[in-house]
Length: 427
Image (tube, rainbow, N blue to C red; front, side, top):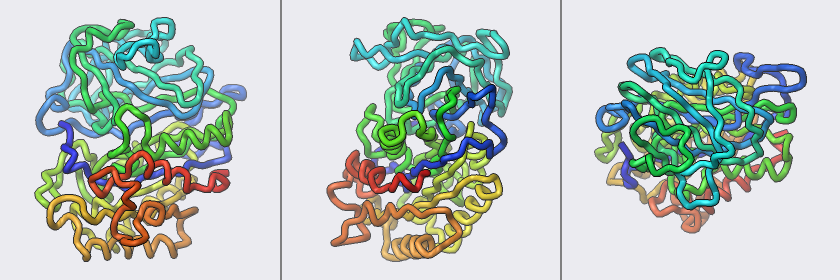
């Protein structure tokens, strides 16, 4: 189910990436062989299928073709599939990875010269994901440049049950009958989706250059609501571009673990202010997802947390409740040996139905921001509120940065957030 634009929850975006060390930190996720390491180049936070609709019904004798854009390059890659929110084992009948075919306008077409079969468990072209489990592919010999687009195609020969998926992809993806994973042309993919990375949660690259990865733990500002569709203009995308221009092969990977509608203290299917019904696709509370979405990422060195605004507008949480959860994420990140960065909450007056924004809720937002600006607990504070607000009316977004719903930035707003980062902080 796609959230209608009037209900696209905000998020406070994300991202500052960072890290200058290749030391193994969270969970020893970096594989070292000689001088090469595995580092995350792309990631997506995933959730349980919605209570109704196609994400609940799942896939059966169908293929999906999913478009993603990576951050850093490498000599080889591997793909992570996930059934972590599944209700049964899921069979993977076949899977490929390729570059898109830039010679055609169809986003479902792939470059036949670059198609690589994904294998698992030492060479098998098919595999099974246990209920609640993940599946890591064997290494793939496909040299990847920074900021490259990739297309992952997966065939599910039997019913999957409710999917594990990421909804707010801001990119077209495709579904079609039977095994279409090796088809260069996308005509067989008869359904175009405006959402949904199904059962795919990460891509790693093998490289001896990158210093690690930074994970963005955010909501819809990190997920790119309000940015140009198929444009890769989310805040973390633009951060990755800046890092590549500044540091080239020494730039860290940027892993976007944002979920539109994510809350610190509430489940995605909980209702919110103004009659908002809640959906599974908004995810579990942030503290319940940090182990999977942050600490398990490959080579992670830094986490940037930009959460809390949805707790205010949806749930009317107190400043103390929001601050307590931000402090807890920070404490857990530090315990894992990660650098922990936090962002202030951006303004949103003028959005939604009556009760979504109130002066009292804005006072809560300002109290959270005041605490963050004065705190010395975090390694750094990103003042996204200051970047995005209208100086003439600080409870609103600057009109030049407003996508039109008064809560999500447009491309220029996301670029301003990226440009506001002093990259010297990232070293």
